Image 1 (spheres, rainbow, N blue to C red):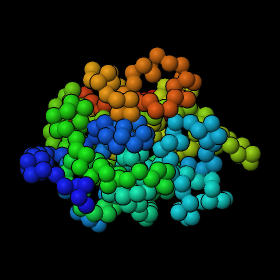
Image 2 (image 1 turned 90 degrees about the vertical axis):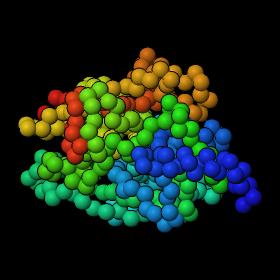
Image 3 (image 1 turned 90 degrees about the horizontal axis):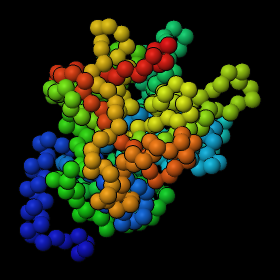
Length: 354
């Protein structure tokens, strides 16, 4: 415990900083100090802006199962998937054929088996938003499963980087207890000061939705999310008995051009619950664009802290889909003024509508 003692002046700074930030932001996205120090993963980490009390369940996240996933070439997406052995109710044939993805903490935070501050919990909830499997066109287009995947194992103080329980690494998470983000760092983005997820969208039969927590001005970046490249064929399910091509549900959460082999899958919080606007009177109020912050050129960041790689846009789709340790950041931008309480809508494009 002596290793965690700090000088009184530094403790005072942390306390004052926490009070300043607690009113506006509960969760920060910023380059990970731990990934750099431990040679564990790349890019962004997540930091708490508020004190998290021991035993607190973190926000529920989407649960996207992948069946018979072909990872023989270890594609970049594989780094973000978890074993589904604990979810016997979803297994089709044998336990080994199920992997799953959850956005947010499980995909971004560094994980370890030693002295983490968020432990793994397994408890799926089911909600199909009342869709009828043979009558509603949205049946099967979104996941029906969610779970609060992590719970605080101790009190976590404002400014701490979040570490989650896993068996993939064993660095001592306690060594980083006082690793704090810099609140003046331009690379820091708040994840929960503008938008919130609700269990039901205003559109019937589509599941969850994202809503504005306050008035948002046209042109404002309302959310940012890292994204991993995915080759389209990777989401095909090989089946000798099926007459039609089967695809993983995860493809409905990816972005790409029709006919392109390259897809981009955003894995930050909230973004995967933003719905297509549907039909009148709803209209899109946001768009997605690549992150344009000049700081993201990475010139001032250590390699494992680098999180946005625009050079990928000059690669061939095949090369991008095989590139590990690099990704891009998507910004969700308001295309008109948005009022507090409004649902956030995207235009998924003509091919989705058809």
